[in-house]
Image 1 (cartoon, rainbow over the protein chains, first blue to last red):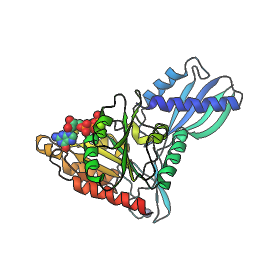
Image 2 (image 1 turned 180 degrees about the horizontal axis):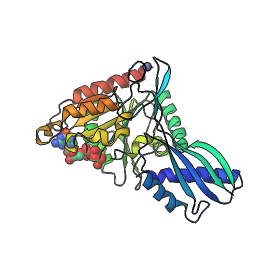
Image 3 (image 1 turned 135 degrees about the vertical axis):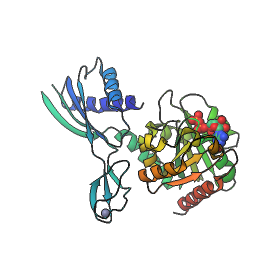
Image 4 (image 1 turned 180 degrees about the vertical axis):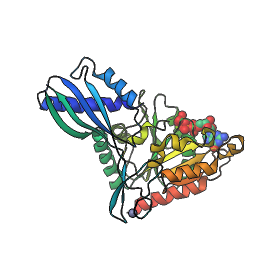
Length: 113
Length: 220
Ligand SMILES: Nc1nc2c(ncn2[C@@H]2O[C@H](COP(=O)(O)OP(=O)(O)OP(=O)(O)O)[C@@H](O)[C@H]2O)c(=O)[nH]1
Ligand SMILES: [Mg+2]
Ligand SMILES: [Zn+2]
């Protein structure tokens, strides 16, 4: 449901960087979406198509790259991959709630001319 | 054709304002909770109970988020509590700028406790930091015990989960054992309170926990 506001913010960032780099048309927008973000890919694409019409990004492709979720174990000073259901450090088997990656939504890059 | 590497967070504009809210809450020593949960799970009912027990000891204020209407704010205003209604006009979550704009309507000097009741929704509000100290999520037994796994982000990011409407347990097929197993595998450090706003059970423990947190924040 909040895909619309997310896409709105994506387009604001794209606009700003297109302007700074003298791009008049954008062909591709790459975003990184953390595994722990509850974002629905189809809704993102749909919202992107709807909101990008008639402006700078008309017809541009939205590429969604999923990024792994990770946590940090303070005991072993190590970062490891986690999922919703398993957050145990592979070394000490202790539970870590220090999530270091997974919630982020980034505009990674844009392509245009 | 040019490629530009950006690597900029889409939530950055929200998080910047959230940090400003947090700075204000910290400098005024206001303990702030973001009260989350599905529609009708009992957020306002729990809040009413919290207010009637806490308002004689601490100064509190409420920000009520709703898509439309001021119904919840009107319920809270009956308790002579400082309340501001924020209508999102269709947006499915509160964001930090909405809170920032509501703050001038609350007197934060001498305030001890601020409750922000978010939009009834188990998905979107989890992603938006408002500047709160804690996220508290309310779910009720009538929703079924599978909700934590269906909406994992919300439960993973919360400090407290309130399981409400326990007076109705025997009428449902709610499986408590599964519920606890799921909730702790998502978030081993989460605190769980089983309450009923109908028969009042469990509310004292919840309120004690909140009062300790309010006091801790005052004393820092
Ligand atoms: N049986 C029972 N009913 C309850 C309990 N708590 C709340 N209710 C009822 O559940 C309904 C919804 O309660 P609210 O407090 O308005 O829920 P809410 O989460 O604030 O709802 P929204 O703000 O609209 O999302 C009301 O009819 C309450 O009377 C409870 O512990 N037991
Ligand atoms: Mg309510
Ligand atoms: Zn470890």
